[in-house]
Image 1 (cartoon, helix red, strand yellow):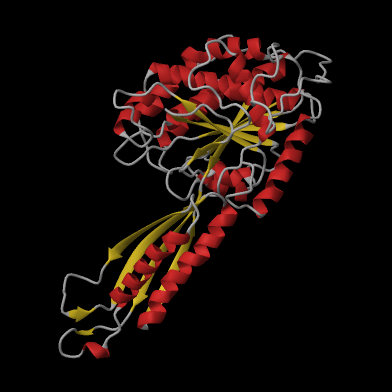
Image 2: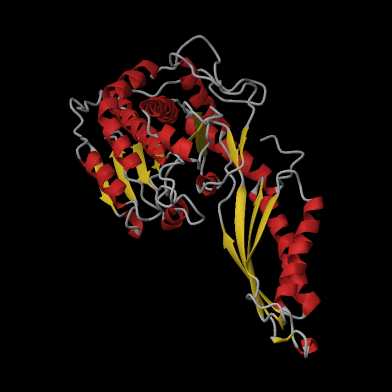
Length: 453
């Protein structure tokens, strides 16, 4: 999987573009096509990605055909790092930051200082479903984007760095992006870019949900159900009270609040006893991390009420999940412009008017979006015969097809354009961060009715 002909020759005395077109996505524009002129580096990115497509296709197929669960992505880790070790100018770190299947590939321009743009590569699959979330396509898009960005950077003498991070374990609630963030992997990074496939949306302005998980236990006192039930403390009753309290709470939750509750241990099969132990699991989702905190307090109150009503001891373990994703409108504007100027724009089109696409799922990219400017672009691949969405067997098959790979390459081109704008457009980094700070202020007071995203 060598990169034939990929020779980097920096152009001397290159300058950043001044007075560029305004690519910014605002609430009053369509977030994409703000003129007839193609973006400055479009043809170069397009041509380069087309030349490396046949080098990336075997990697895409290998990952898809060798699904590995979270934090066990050893084959993918080895294949991807081996590939980058054949690429001139890239410095590769295997098992980065103490995580066995995490990795980094860093390309630095000799013209420093400059911005640092990052692309995340997801690799893990789903239990019993393989790559039914299309993480092979996420990897392809980020690889294409990173390589193309480095190519343009070198050819035009742009200052800066390109950082590609292999981020294990996104499926579940313990994604490596959070671990990597805490470990300092994103220190000095100006923007974080990634994508995610589906069949419904093409959009760089993607909001996702925040979620948390509760593991609840009730400890009572066993007693015979006929002879002396008054001597017992019924842990199952405590859980049932909490379950019913949550059910009543749903009447007054907000439209985007979701509460799921399961009884994992009902005290055992015997019916003529006062149960000494019961347990359950609860998952909550909300439209923002701020709203999630409010919902979490209400749900915890329901669990505590079960203990208060019965006298049972309650232990509540809260497992932090993922924050909601807050997209950066400036970055999204660049992405949409490149996407719309490439040939044969696919359906569905990117929504006009700066409209946000809501995806009621969660990702650890959301946590990154609260730490630095981010885009998590949704892209639609040609569906399978059953039009199955992610996490279905039908989607797993569709994600392995060449047509899906080709769509991921298009995404890679748009992501590369977004990154190149950050590297080349004068004042773009400041503009992106100004928008990010504004979003973070708004998210502190988030509510369903008022927030523009």
